[in-house]
Length: 224
Image 1 (cartoon, one colour):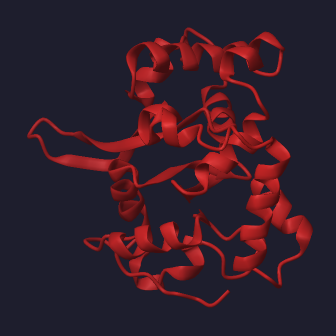
Image 2: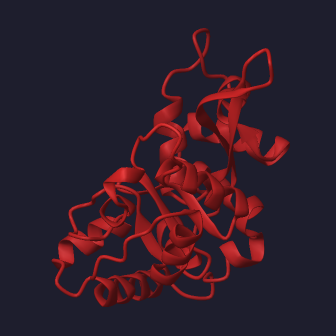
C-alpha cells in the first residue's frame, strides 16, 4: 500500500481505524507498520512526542486495541476487526474452557484470575499478584504475551512512574485488562456467530485489500 505518513496521535488512531490491522514494527510486509509510516524525526527525540507516546493515547482512549498482537510483537487493531481476530484466535474457546482442555498454562490462568477478580491492573502489580517474581514463578512476559496473542488480554492504558516530587519519568508502565473490559463484551464477542474459519477468511480478505502484492504466507503469518 502507499505510505501515509503520520505525525501525531490523532493521525495514528485514524490510520489504525482505517486499516483495521496495523503492526507497530516492520513485519515482513513492506510499508505496513507504524515504523514505516512515521518520519524519523519523531523517533526517540527528546522533547518530541512520537509513536511510543501516541500508542499510549490510543490505548487509553480504547478506540483501538493495543497489545502484542502480531507475531508476539505490538500493534493496533480496530474495533471493527478485533472481533474477527478474537473469534479466529480463540477458536471457540473462552479462557476457562481452553485451560480445562490443557491448551492454556497454569501461569496464564493465574494472570487471568487476577484480571477477572481485580480488573485493569498495572503490569508490576499483576506480576506480583499472580505469583511471579524473585520468590515466585518465572515467565511472566511469555505468559502475558500469549494471552495478548490469544486476544484474552489487551493493554488498558499506560502510566508513568513518578519521583518524590510527583514528576513522571521513564517509560509508561502498561495496565493490562481482559479484552472485554477494554472494548466491551458485546464488541469483543460480536463475531462469535461466525466460525473461526469464516473470521480468518474475512481477515485475509482485508489484508489482501491492504497489501495486494504481499505473499499469502506473510499475510497469514500476521494473523496466525
